Amino acid sequence: MMNSRTSEDSRLSRRAFLKKSFAAAAGALAVPAVVPSSVFGADAPANRITIGAIGTGGQGQYNIRAFMSKPAAQVVAVCDVDEHRMYEAARIANLPKGSAYFDFRELLCRGDIDAVVISTTDNWHAPAAIAAARAGKDIYCEKPLAYSITEGRAVCEAVKKYGRVLQTGSQQRSDNNFRFACELVRNGRIGQLETISVEIPANSRPNPLEWKIEPPPQYLHYDLWLGPAPYRPYIELGTHYRWHFLYDFGSGQITNWGAHMLDIAQWGNGTQYTGPVEIEGAGRFPKGGLFETPLDYDIKYTYANGVVVHLTTCRPDGRETGVKFEGTAGRVFVSRQRIEAEPGSNLRSRTGANDIRLYYSIDHHQNFLDCVKSRRPPAAPVEVGHRSASLCYLGDIAARTGRKLKWDPRIERFINDDEANRFLSRPMRPPWRFDV
Image 1 (cartoon, helix red, strand yellow):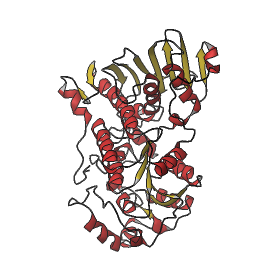
Image 2: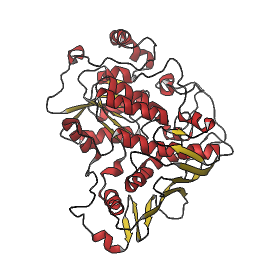
Image 3: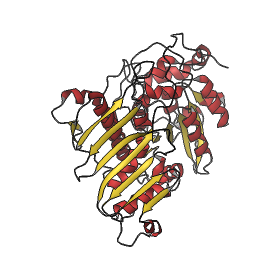
Image 4: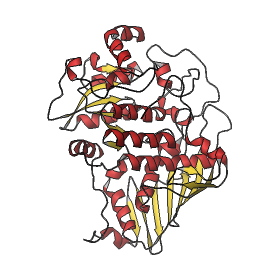
């Protein structure tokens, strides 16, 4: 196993190249827009989309395997700050060690990469996506699209400015049942839509009351793992998944599962390009231990069209996470396991010639590849991903402030509430920054 110092020393020539290419700050996320593939002695096959994977944990490895299964794609590079995971991903993708990186900026400088898949901690989504857009790469980015509402808007601007295709990893948009449920609602099969109930899992992960501060392991580039997040001493969490429940890196289950289910609520409500006008609710915060984000939620979002979205946390009583649409003439419930409706005849209905037909996709990864080739918007484009993530953060901000909030979805600001508006962004730890 190559340790950190050996890995760095073996790439001195590339390091020198990077220093000349990046902006003045050592950690700046500016990268050259075009680098000839001849720099690295590799040529991309003309008939396949070449992909670099940034973040190779559980979800990252899932995405690598998904793209490897597609004849139109070829995974040519992997990157992770955890060298154990980095080399494991290289093994999965059948790549030499020279195509495995711990610094994603090195991967982005390869001119033989067409697109990247970003499966990092949430705090890295926006910086990595913006850097990828500047480097001329198309982007498959896991949800939530960004760590904050301000960062999400910056990703939208970067994708537009550099003409890139971005698919948010909201895979339920490529599921027949979720699309059909939303079509039933959008076409008035349950009458006038009134309420949408969204259930997500509670935080079921152990919350350690005591933990030990210790030196980071040699195989982990800890400062780069922290990236733009505030510095904090290293602690062994047991699994990197637990970062979801630390505010420096995520926002708990509301951005983990809520990003999926609230996205479907937005789709069925026809509000995927806007947001609510009022948010209120609460979260039950831990009273001890390491984790900081709510154990469960009770949030209500009110839209300009009068529809109320009610997000709650599932209890361990057998209920499954899902979305229930209720209207004046019926209801539709949809989850990853099933779809049901009242009246039941709605499940046998067909979309008519004059009905609303929503974006058709049955394979999220293949849809991304198809759109990279066609340059058409994908099933979960950047603005949709941003608006769905924003809904998660709006709910979390309501829980943290503990009061009803007025929101202007057009300018993406709270109305007459400076305290709440401070939650819309976060400072980035120097020298990290991103420039759209």
